[in-house]
Length: 456
Image (cartoon, rainbow, N blue to C red; front, top):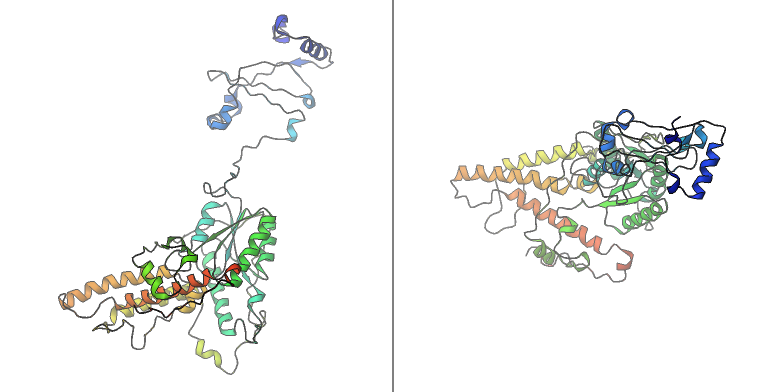
């Protein structure tokens, strides 16, 4: 073998310690060799163009003598014969390099809110948002993660008797929720996902599922009542111990919490003051409905589970034909959207009645949209209702103007005005509940005067 390869450095530049090391290697019974490889032949071109990987190769080219025994391999020099300047990579692995392979896969950044697709898996905790349309929580989880596990929990604390002896959740409402969960599962399955259903406390169920699938985060909509806020605090506490982030969203009101022109603690305690403050406030657009969702996590082999019936929840089904009064009230997102469209058609067909300064109202057999149960369960969002009725009002105004020549004394968008009035009242009650739902607010609470200035 060429002497230059065996002694790559001149005697003047080699220290005594290095000479001793060379002497030891030279005396080894194993043969020595110089290894030269072309990066263009062993690595793909896009590997070298990655900025982080390329930075590793910009060091002065060196040659090193290596023993042929693989277990004592400590330094590796790779020389590119196709690129200029020559690139070199030196490994500083002191143990067997086969035990610590180089990982080139993407890593989640320290900031979880960074680019999409950076999470391995996440959980979407459905609460009072049993829908796939206008669901920012579901959309964000789908965009941020490689796999999504939708979950709904029937919390035993929501059932049984209250301290006053009344049912916390009656059989009619429970049956409505069960139907809504069935419909949500159907809609998720149609988009390539599914719904995991459990009967148990969320702070226990969600932690178990997060461990099973290796979840990075839990996505959920915030709620407003005292018990619901307490549940959120417990979830954050237990997830923090597991290193899982909890991301909350807001989607239960017409106006977004972050868009209010005041801090929540400074919110007026009467409806008139609230209405005056939010007048002219812009309503956010609805979130686009996804046609396809990310698949369920492969890790953990989580079973979807069965949706409980009334007996499973400790409730007795209605007897003596009492259920017939509620037979037409079917839970679910599909039913909610159909009712909204039907209501919009009726608003267009029904002439306005509410002139001479009288309060706008919907009259006759359809005096109400009767959609409150679906709003409460989150099968439909207030913004979706607003969008649909806004379209209806526009068409109604155009039709009324053509019929009357612009001289009608009635308001052609009566239904729109009336619905906005009702949705604004609903916003007031939810925001005022949120204001006083925190434990520290209980002692400071001032009674809300909802009726003050209600029709101002």
